[in-house]
Image (cartoon, chains in turn blue, red):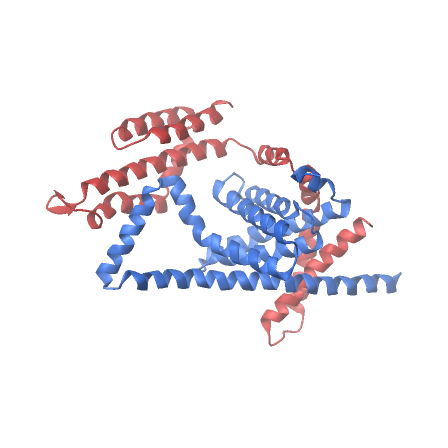
Length: 211
Length: 182
């Protein structure tokens, strides 16, 4: 049978739906509470930290519902909850969360739920968070903004007497920092999934004992 | 309500045709149209951070970048880069106004309705369940957070937070299992 989102999400059980809703709600709550705190405290690389936490949440969610469509639905729930909290629709955070869900969905659907796919999802999403401002500025200001950035970059090198290659290294280091954070987020996402599984077993045993 | 969807479309369409020759004319027409349709939308353009960025882009960048063959009050600047920067600035103002007019008149319910239509068949059910579960998620999260605060602190704070996060998610999943037996 040909793959479509429709037949993919057809296979969701009632419990799957409930689990996706729970993780979507958890992701949304995290975006609202932690997001506001990070923004309020003006923590450096706040967006990257928020993305890393989101990766840990939705990869864990995907571990328990390893079906196509699950991650993008968690993202959609989280995005709507986020705009509910703001009270009005602000395009940027809404689209950013949807994009996170979509990118995560594509990688996890293609590679399945395993440590490698979780780590790759983390890395790709964190690197995307570096590019996101440039993409959105390209849309708003047009492609000429890239010329300005490039010229500014060259001029800065001239003024500071730093070769362009050295400035490139600084950018590479910044991207590298995101890459490491993405790796950790994906790795922790997988580790967290296993730990949750263990905790869930304990809770089930406790319930059996009580019964 | 239609005007709040058609006007942003017209504004975005005008972006395709904007160039250095017609930018002031197109920008003036776009702003007059926006003011007539939704005056409030123009308020978004007066954010300090955005105006600062725009100021640097239009007035700062031509002083440092490009061939500075022109001069104003003895200050050399690049005429080409100035025109390019003004074009970008006006373009951004039109786009942001279009987005504001559109999003300012779309309710969250409408947005979730649209998401339901994008062939994610179960999304309406998922979203309704999420809204229904939100107080429970909040309650379980707060209860777990209280327990976390009162629990004996370990030397490795990271491991401590990690374990309690796992506990929280396990409790949420356990709640789901309890609610819907497979």
